[in-house]
Structure formats: C-alpha cells, structure tokens
Length: 235
Ligand code: NAD
Ligand code: ZN
Ligand code: ZN
Image 1 (spheres, rainbow, N blue to C red):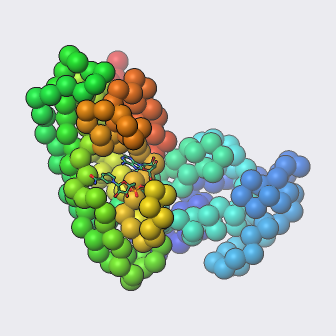
Image 2 (image 1 turned 60 degrees about the vertical axis):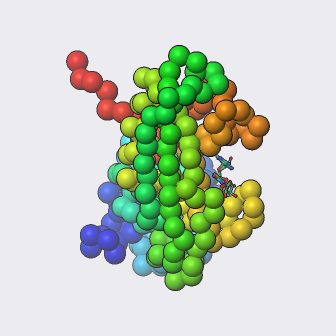
C-alpha cells in the first residue's frame, strides 16, 4: 500500500474507537452500531471485532471500522478519507484525472452578464490512454471526446479566484475522471468530475453557458466540497 500504510492504518489516523456506541444505524452498512458491521465483502476480515465502532475525529460521525475500511478500499486510496454523511475531508483529497494539459489566457471579449470585464478562457486537453490502477477498468483503454474543451470565466476578482482554485483542483486531479458519460452513455471515457465548467461562450442554450448569475458561487461551493478553498489572510 501507498507509503507503507494499509487501508486500516489510513482510516485509524482519522478515527477514534467508541466504547459504548448509541442505538443508531451505521449509515454505510445500515446495520446498528451496537452490532457488527454488515459489510460482507473482501479486505476487512482481519479487523478485530474488539474495536469495531468509532467516530471520525473532526466531524464526530460514527461508523463501524470495517465499513470505513471497505469504503476506503472501494475508492482511489490516496491516503484521504471523506465522511459519507457530512463530506468532511480528512487529509488531502485527490482524484483520478488522467494525464493532460490545462492552459488559460485572457481574451478581449465580455461574457453575457459580465459586460464590464474581459474573459478568461481555459483549455483542457486530455488524450485517450490506458486506464491506471485508480480507474474503473485498469489496463483497458479509455476514450477522450470533445478535447480540447474550452471553458470561460469572467476576468474579474471572483473569476480569478475561481481560476486559482481550478488550477489547484487540476493539480489534485479532480477536474476530470474516467467513467460513463451521463450525456452520451459511453463507458470508459473521460468525463467531467463534480466541478461544473462553462463551455459555451456567447449564449446559454445548453445550460453550460452565460448568463448565469449564480455560477461563480456555485462552483466555489463545488470546489469546497472537494476540499479546495483559498487560505484566508491571517489577521
Ligand atoms: P457527463 O455527460 O458525464 O456529465 C458530467 C458533468 O458534466 C455533469 O455535471 C454535466 O452537467 C456536465 N456537462 C455535461 N455536458 C457539459 C458541457 N457541454 N459543458 C460543461 N459541462 C457539461 O460529462 P462528459 O461526458 O464529460 O460531457 C458531456 C458531453 O459534452 C460529452 O459528450 C463531451 O464530448 C461533450 N463536450 C464537448 C465539448 C466540445 O468542445 N466539443 C466540450 C465539453 C463537453
Ligand atoms: Zn457499518
Ligand atoms: Zn461527518
């Protein structure tokens, strides 16, 4: 395992045993916390029953240890953990975006709804390739449709903040993923992850264009849900 840590080691970094759990259900397996984990899959058999229930240290949500380890095993195993109830992130969340390029520049045109500033154009380019171990079907090819994909932000203070955070999201491999496109139904292809982009410039026929007065705030929330926020200035 990565950095010599087993999945159980990773989970235990963020988890604390609770001796007398309440009469509540574990929201991963839907079984009571006072009984054993309902998870029956592989990979967790060696975990002792004696330390079966605990809380995530920051948010306090309670789970069977085996359930958290199983959840971690089903993800991309990057050393981070996200509470399935409140989405609190432990460690630094990274994704499985394939290799590619992200570029941007300012173009001297205004977006509908942002008449007072120029526009930042982002260009993403990801070539097709072979799936890595962190992808759904390792060893199998994936396709990449519609690249380069062009996206737009207003070149104002909030737009530039979104740009800075998107650059961080790119470095953490969170902008794209490999999976099944909900638009085309194609599997094993590069798809947008959970951070919306505006790919239409002069209109909003697709819903992925401007004007959209809520867009910048929405995308800041989506970035936050992935653990990407700007460090506030210290006072
Ligand atoms: P998807 O259909 O699995 O959807 C994932 C997320 O992306 C959803 O939240 C969806 O709302 C959003 N999304 C869907 N279409 C979008 C669009 N045109 N612009 C911005 N966001 C969009 O994701 P996907 O398969 O990556 O993208 C959907 C389709 O859009 C694909 O067929 C892709 O080829 C096409 N596309 C083409 C271009 C192009 O320049 N030709 C650019 C972007 C997307
Ligand atoms: Zn459970
Ligand atoms: Zn939580």
